[in-house]
Image (cartoon, rainbow, N blue to C red; front, side):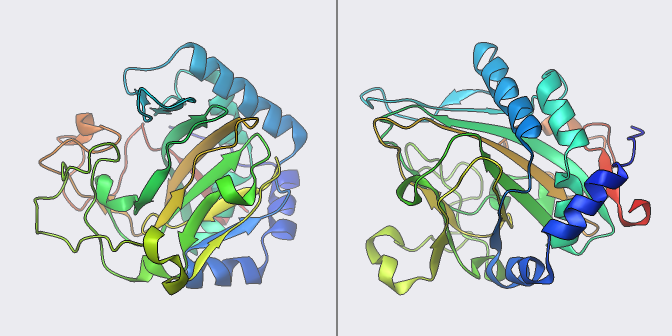
Length: 285
């Protein structure tokens, strides 16, 4: 897919917003918050996209909270091709370039989008986990964005164990019933009980206002609590791949399930496919 280069206005915005300190923090901690980098019009696009998504959920959507939860936690994946607001936001915002700078990559390739909405009063927490073990990719140059269109308090925000992306892969389990549906039991180290021993871990996180973006590595351990009774938490995540990311097909269903590419990209090959367009190159900026 041929993608138009970012405008000079956006390129200059990124160069002003993303500092060497942000890049160093991303490399060291595996997570960083960049304040007020998105405009009100970009946030409006994203709100419209999330509301359209909620009205027309895809077959990948799931309710990630229990039936007795007073709120509701709903997720959906891979909708940029059918949601015009998402597509405009992803292709025309500065995020692909920001990802490239943080990854220290010469290219920035879209991997997938992910909507996460916790309605007011949702108790369901997102347990501690790494993202990359759920996926069909290998490599270290990657970047995920967690973008809230509603204000998020420090108690309800996404939290990270700083530096955990530099460690080993940990066993991915299903969030609702703790099942090992990806890697076989015993094949990876089990996740420690971080929540019961928070004082033993370098946990970081930020109160968020619309326009802020949280950027994190796919191997950084992260978690989030439920939300307050009067707060709605609408979040959009976008994930990008850098130069060293390659295809690692699995024998099991990944999350999200993009198994249609299994026979289309060779093992260890670049994620060169129309589902994963390159949205930014260093040469273009």
